[in-house]
Amino acid sequence: MTRPADHPPSPVPVLLYHAVMDDPPAWIAEFTVAPRRFGDQLDAIVASGRTPVTVGALVDRLIRRVPLPPRPVVLTFDDGFADLPGPTAEALAERALPATVYLTTGAITPGLGSLLPPAPMMTLAQAPSLERHALEVGAHTVTHPQLDTLRAGELDRELRESKAALEDVLGHEVAHLAYPHGYNSRAVRRAARRAGYASAVAVRHALSSETDEPFRISRLILRRSHTVADVEAWMAGAGARAAPFPDSAATVGWRLYRRARAAVRGPEFAG
Image (cartoon, rainbow, N blue to C red):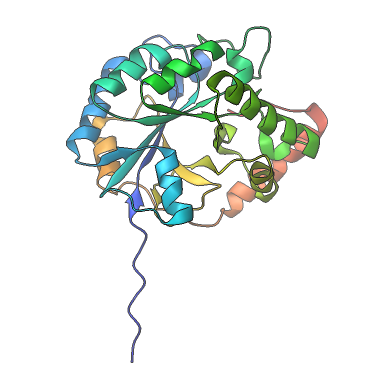
């Protein structure tokens, strides 16, 4: 008697945006979407018939098997650029699209600093306004370093201090984390659990799924070269592989190289 073949995981697109602006600084330009193109991409998401949910809802499915609506999609935003609490949040609200945003607290707190190069940023005081637009707020570390190259104490501070700063201004628990530039390792994932997070998103340039790993959820990063057709393909569950899957040899090798470099130079910007 033959056993039925395993069904592949049902793809869940988790999109990663950064800045939405017409004239971004050069260092983030590759990962910036112009406002008009952003609106067209949001319209394509709506037209796809997928149901937008937050990372929190996806994690409830991954951990507790809470049902998701049919054909979910998740939108995420990293860093906290100045457009986020204004036109970007408004564009999402106009289409009734929830999202999850991950804030780099050192870059948005007056008097602090981060490894992010200069750019127009929101402020920490604006974080509560994001929730009023139905945006879920998560942490993106304090300084945006390559977490998988840090010593244990530095890693712990990046995870805990960003979480505490957001919880102080929001008045409630912050349960979700984004690894800067997706860089993570087993040690980083264990540290995220110890710091009290319920999930963490990576990048991986892949579709997520309802069997993905809660502490390295796969995302598809939006570049300025991506078109509406790319977004439509992802909404159809095509155009990229679906997680979970193990790290490639190239990913492991790149991590070892970066660790050796950080041992000489110290913490470096993840980007």
